[in-house]
Length: 67
Figure (tube, rainbow, N blue to C red):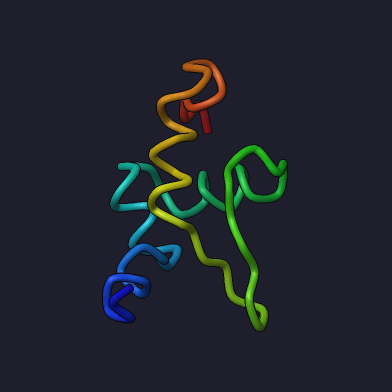
């Protein structure tokens, strides 16, 4: 598999907020509640785009951004 492709699926907080069209504070709130798929590597949050897509297709109430 292409290394460039592997890097493209891991999003930063800024990229994820833009991808999901939500604020960074809302994203951090979701992370603190463990209600969004994320990974933490060397103290930095990363979000797998494919996992986010699956999460958004799941329970609509869980994927709503109410913060």
